[in-house]
Image 1 (cartoon, rainbow over the protein chains, first blue to last red):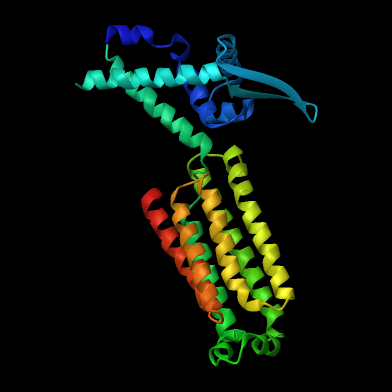
Image 2: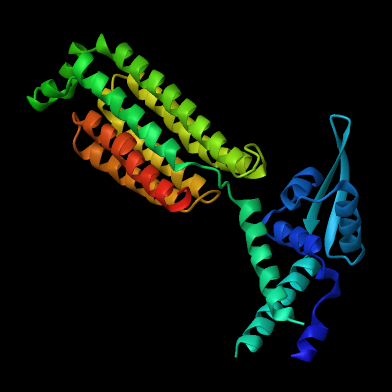
Length: 100
Length: 211
């Protein structure tokens, strides 16, 4: 069990980050405001977690202007998808081993 | 340190976020019941007040004659249908907005947009085809067509909202095909598909999710 815990991806340790990844797994792209509303996070909090995930190469962020307003959209990268799947598998394993 | 509890919570949260962000979950069962009652009222008006030409069709004198004879009731039937459609949409909107507010969800978001887009194509193309058929004088084909296209629209929408909508969609599609086999009885199929099926579905949904 110990070694599974060690393998857990540190990038997903936080609830908001888990939320971001979950939402992006099932939505091709999503804009900043929708994410904010879904997760109930503040602007600053959300953007710091987003840039942390981007730095790890798990999500991609693109900024455009729509009607002269800045519009940030996020999407999960192939690497992020893979990493999140592995993370879910590990969580599952952990729970199973505990229940035995 | 019970980390397994925490992991279980994490998994639950992940599942919740995936559901919430990809499905429109505010659809109220009461919307279905209200739309069904409105449809039954509309069908009753067509039957008792406007004298929908079913008796003539049953006498077996052919559809062309029936259409000619009742040409003057067609605008009235169309008006009846349009008023009922607006009433049903208005009531559905009201109950769905009420449920969204109760659950603290916003009514207009990405999931709403996707669901409406999925509905729009089959529904609008079906509606236009029905209008074309009416102008061609093929009135009897309208009941089967509306049911089939509405059913297909619901099946498409069910991908983006509660899965039960698919059952209603399949039922209405099959009923529409049956209605095509029994021309002249369109109003009864129509009342069953838009009236009774909606009420049954709405009641089930209400019992399951809102009580």
